[in-house]
Structure formats: C-alpha cells, structure tokens
Length: 467
Image 1 (cartoon, one colour):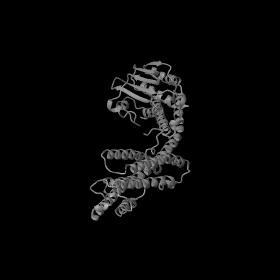
Image 2: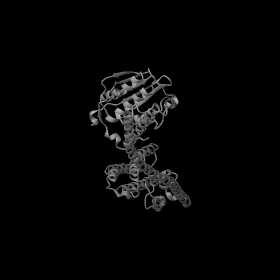
Image 3: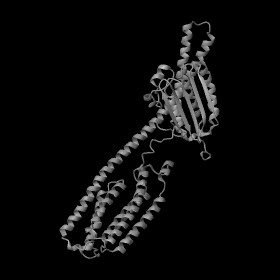
Image 4: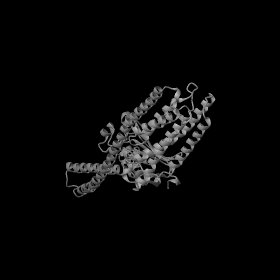
C-alpha cells in the first residue's frame, strides 16, 4: 500500500517537466562540450598541427558565452508545473510546448550546428573525421524535440556541411587543411567528396530514424502509463470514498445491535436458559468483531488520503500510553497476565493523537490477546538518543520466520494466531505500520515461535521547525 503522502503520478513526468529536464541536461552537456573542445584543441596544438588556433579559441569562447546565456535563459523560464497546477497554463501544453521553452530548444540546436560548422571550417571541413559529430547532434536534436524532425535535421546538417564544402572548393572561403597531405579540398577527387557527403547523410538519417523510432515508442508507453496511473488513482479515490461511506453507514447499526444485546442480556437475566445466554454472548462477540473490522476499514480509508501525513502536530506520548494501559490492565488481570510497565519522560513527537494512541493500543492489546494465561507482558516507553523508543515484549505464542515477512500486510494473520484466537481482522499491524511510517519512524519485530514476541517502535522527536 502506498504511503499516505505518496502521489502515484509524481514519478511519471508530464511533457513540460520532461522537456525542462532535457533543457537542463542539454546545457550541462554543452559545458562538457566546452571542456572537451578545449582539451582537444590543446592536444592538437601540442601535436603541432598547423591550424587557426586563434579562431578556434574565439569560437570556443563564443560557445561558452552562448551556454552562459542559455543557462540564464533557462533559469528565467516560468515554472509551468506550478502554473499548470493553478490552472494558468492551458491543458494543450502537455502536448504542444510553451513558446518560450520551444524557442530555447530550437535556438540551442541551431546555434550548436552553426558553431560545429564553424569549427569544422577552421579544422579541415568535410575531411575532418570529427564531421561525424553531426550524427551526435542529430541524436540529441531528435531526442529533445517531441516531433519527428529527422528529415529536417538531416537536410539542415547536409546543407551546412555541403555549403561549406562548396564555398571552400571554389575558394569563396579559405580552406584550412588539417593534414599536409590534403592542402586544398579540391585536391580530393569529386567522387570521394561526394562519397563522404552521401555517407555522412546516410549515417545521420539512419541514426535519426532509429532514435526517433525508439524515443517515440518510449514516449507513447510513458503517455499510456501516465493515463493508466491517472485512472488507477481516480479509481482508488472512488474506492476509498465508497469504503468510507459504506463502513460509516454500517457502524451505527452494528453499535446499536451490540447495545441491544447488552440490554437483552440485562432485562432477560434469569429468564433465559444457558443455551440462550450463550447465543446472546456469541452474537455480541461477533458484533464486536464486526465493529472492529468497520473501524479498521475506516482507518485504512483515512490514512490513505494524500494529505494525511500533512496533518501532523506535536503530541506528548506518555499520557496516551497511560490511557491505553488503563484500558488493557483489566484484560490482563482477567487472564492472570503480569503487566510490567516502564515509563520514562520521552520527547514530544510529530504525530497525531488518535494515530499514536492506536499504535500503542494495537501493540499492547495484541500482546495481551496472544499471551496465554499467567504470562507476562512488558511495556517500555523512554528516550533513545533523541528519538522516542516504545517496545512491547510478551511471552506469548510467537511468530514464525515465514509469517514475520507478511506480518504488516493487510488482512494477514499468522497461522498460529488464527488457531489461538478467532478475534482479529488482520488490519491492526498494517495500520500501525502506516501510522509509524507517516510519523517518519520505524517498527521492528523480533519473535521466536512458542516463546514470545517483541515489537519496537522508534519515532523522531518534534522540532520547532516542524511548526
């Protein structure tokens, strides 16, 4: 069962958040590119290649300035998630990105391709092996943009490198050789230039098409998963509402039935035979069991509401436990169970009065219920470091290792517990764990079959900043 404060959809980003994260990743990747280009130019410089290093370092500085500008632009983008939640952003933005976000994506991709072409111009043009960095930029562009732009990017990349090659071939732009073997681009046969050009285009298009196919499949699955999860969350809300209404409606008549059994037993005392008295006692017992089940179901519905964990407050635990012990003492005495109590002065905790009281009540009442006559139950409440420490140890029937793995599951009861006592809904420990988790605490169990069980609860203290 999810935690009360957990939103099932938080882990599934919408289109706006997804693209915002991509923008952030692209900017960080560009800073890595700045460092990588700087290192590459530095190594080439040490290898004494004859290149226009001044122009390359100017382009490198321009790349860094562009990235700084994009970083500033990204920071100033509106928080569309908050605006969407407040209803200020149209719903269609989940499918068509806001203009500011789309503009930054397009500008970044265009500037990257233009700067890459400029770098290639000063380092051998089409002959430079790094011309295939266009393929990497193709993959990045296809991944970033929600629409299929494989053909557009392929044509744009080929137009940039093709135009550069033509201008260098006819000396409109000065050619900067990367190798003394090829002093001018025209030294290479035209068919070789064409082959490199066509090969680059094919690799770009195929890489883009494959990336687009994979990304589209992932996005479609993500949208379907988001839709299915949304439906499940709504269905869960309907279920909780139905459960709350039904159990609430059942609570009053069951309580009235139990009261009627009590009244019948009192008024008919001495008039009924032993069998009739047993039937009344059994009916009352079953009614009390049904009432407990209704209360547990109501509690399950309550703790699974999304805002449950936000309604915590400062709680003093000792008075709550003292009240619980007062109620359980009589039951323990009836079974001849020795109830040992050690109460210190534990810190206040961030919890709910009713929820923490239920944690105490569930653990203590279980210990008394599943401890045979003349057994022993020890209850401890004290500070443990800064935390609240609460433990209940009994000499009861114990719990097998196999059953301990499922102990906090809803409607689960240990096999020996069913034989020992028919009472119980299998919800008490599940509810207890949910409460403790919502407090930011932890619950542990240590048990040996046939010897006894110890439950230990630790809850962090209430702090002034929790107000």
